[in-house]
Length: 113
Length: 112
Image (cartoon, rainbow over all chains, first blue to last red; front, side, top):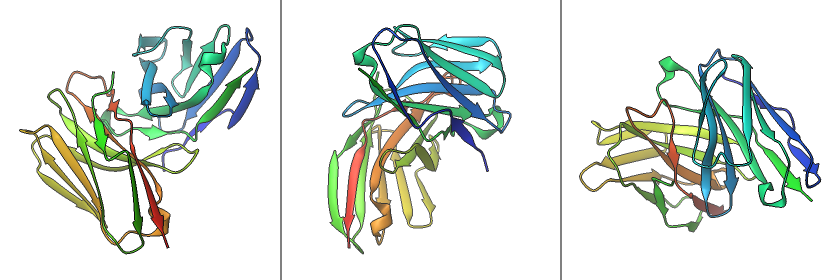
């Protein structure tokens, strides 16, 4: 079974802090994604990566950056957290041979105070 | 930007009844997928239907796709309390690098 793990289920940070959210997948998938999920808005793509050290902006990249130094790990960075970044963050991965089916981690609920 | 839009936004049914939810999208697609999300958890893939398919079954799930109307439906037959979850449709295109566009979801509550 594909396993996607995220570093924290719940996280509370203060405004202005630097926040790291980590995602690890164990299926040698090429593509990895970071979404945020807010009530009534569904999932919105923040960034995605199709290879090591490669990244592309999604629909809402402002205020975020990413890092992919190893194939299995994709990190989302909030350089200076703000209250409007309070949200559920979901990581997903997909392999080239698996079509477009995405495998999701359990999510990180981030609260910025 | 949202590609898929689910209808209804919320659905409440009793165990044993069927649940039907619909998804409409705006642009041409390569495939359409349905995912389930239990409260506070990640999404789980349910079923994928390609643009050249019209209907697909998986256990108690039945998905239809009408590309002329740019719409899809998900039917859950003989629902169970464990089917209580949010259901999302997502669309993929040939040039999308595996990216998907998700709708806002339908929240389904199945009462015993």
